[in-house]
Every structure is written in structure tokens, then in C-alpha cells.
Length: 117
Length: 114
Image (tube, rainbow over all chains, first blue to last red; front, side, top):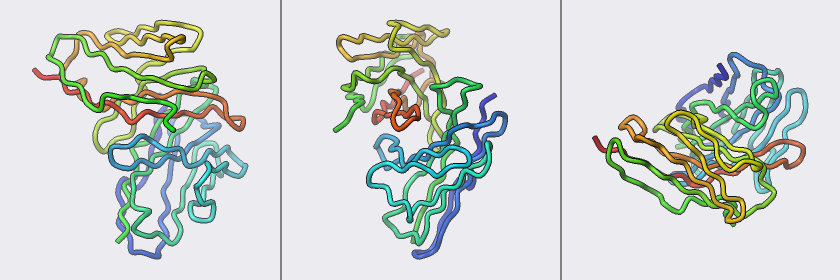
């Protein structure tokens, strides 16, 4: 149980285009979903927290207009990187949590590697 | 400033021996600590956790110890197996802005040699 699916696993795009990443909780309803970014040999950095049906809460320094987050249902959250540039190239990972499963434990997707040319 | 630190970027042990991974934190508001295991090109997988009101939690070959006064926790794996080779992340949880948020260390790469 507690499986989180993330799609796509790898995407290459041209500079200036937008990329959408999907995060789904497959066997539980996620009250909260999180989006992280990881640079090589660094820890996971929280970008934003989203609760179903409400606006995402962004961490300091994360551009809201750049990284659009939508959490339309209890099983789906999307991250759209708008007008992507090479410096946005990174590994993006989502996670989900549910009070019905275990309050403090976040279950992670497999991540999406974004390469912007 | 790093609130969660894993000072050893790598650790190498022999199969069958004990692996000890260490983690230090600075924020006394953290109320829950977790260890995640991560293979290349995969997301982190939850391994074991401990509440701040406990000092030990055991699950099979994995034991996590918490020393609150020293703000230090460790993960013991015994006996270590080659399949345990992965990057281990320590994470600490605290309520911020109404949600339980995790702060991660940079990870320790464990290599278990046959």
C-alpha cells in the first residue's frame, strides 16, 4: 500500500516551453502532497505544499508563477514548470501523505528528471 | 543553515557486519524523525521512523536510536546485506504553516561489500 506514481520519469524540452509533471496516489487518498527539487549530491529541497482544493503554499525563494501547482483531487497533483530555462534542469520529486495511512510519513514518487536545452 | 546534517557522505561495510548511519539536527521543534532509502533514479522509500518521545525503535534488521539531549539520531543495520547498498536520507518533521513538513539531510551513500 501507499504507492505514489509520478509521470513522466524523464523529460527533455526546449528553453521557453512548459512542462507538466503528474503525481498520483494510487491506493490512498492524499490529504497533502509535496513537491521537492533535488540537485546532484544535495538533499531534497521542499518547493511547495499542496492540499486538495486549495492553493499551494510555496517555500521562500520558490517562484509561484514559475512553478504552478494544481491539486484538483485527493489523488492527483500536478507541477507545471512554465517557460523552462536550463537552470530549471533538476530532479523533481513529489510525495503524498494521508492521515488515514500515517500522519508523519510521506510516500514518494520515483521522481522526474527534467533537462532543459 | 542546515537543520539536518549527515556528515558522512559515504560509508562502506562488509556483508554481515553492522552499518551505523548518523544524523544530527539543530531544531528542537522537530517532533518526528524518519529514515529513507533511495536507489538511483528512484524516489526515496520510507524505512523506519521514531517519535521524539522515544529513544529507540526497532524493525527487523533496522534500529533507530534518538538522543534528544545531543540532537543526534542513528540508524543501525545488522546484519548488513549487499541489497542494503543505497543512499540513506535522514529527515526531521515539524509542523510549519499547518502541515507536517520534512527537512532532509544530504544523504549517506552506503556500500555493503559481499
